[in-house]
Length: 137
Image (cartoon, rainbow, N blue to C red; front, side, top):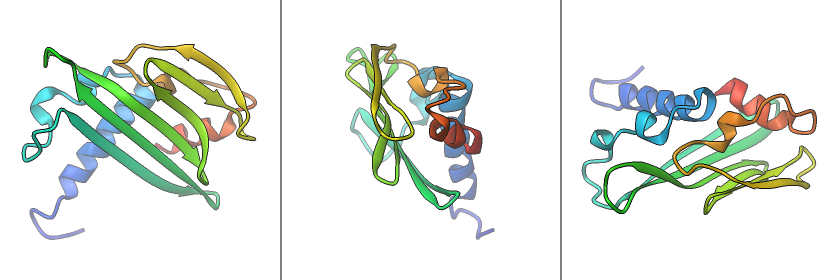
């Protein structure tokens, strides 16, 4: 609830776009089209951050997107998911790094800069924290 023009619809739209990117697997172009970038910012980078308290633990999700050099498509510059300040997932420089629920490194692999690596992670017995965040989102 809030006054007209206070940002209710903008917030709902932003959450919906992050959800489409992380959970449904939409490309960065589809979830964050060029026409919807922040108008008052002229930087090619856009940053999205969410913090959620689930079951007494704090999740922090951060996504930085960037226009490609030819200004044609949106790419992931950095994507991070933390639980109580510890890394669960990191996607930087075309590399996904996965950690288990005890924050131990599990895997590193190359990935497409136009998508969220989180969208491909499903049913990991040692990664229930990531699944919990995605279910909430």
